[in-house]
Length: 108
Image (cartoon, rainbow, N blue to C red):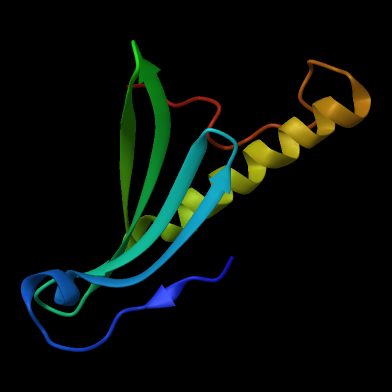
């Protein structure tokens, strides 16, 4: 699937959303949306939309993450490390990590 770029008039909706790409995955759809601020700065929203059927009615649950440019590198690194960990588990069938992340000792 390809994303799309928004253009045209600068009303409040088109100014805000710059680019969007939906990823359909079974009952879920993920949206990766690039949005702009009034100062022409950019950020990413990642939305998970899940179809939920209740007693004949259809609703959608949505969960959204806002990712700001100053966090792109750390977020990407964390995601890549996590995916590598999962791939290692799937390939080796081991529950022990083959590497230690610098994020292992985070306190909240």
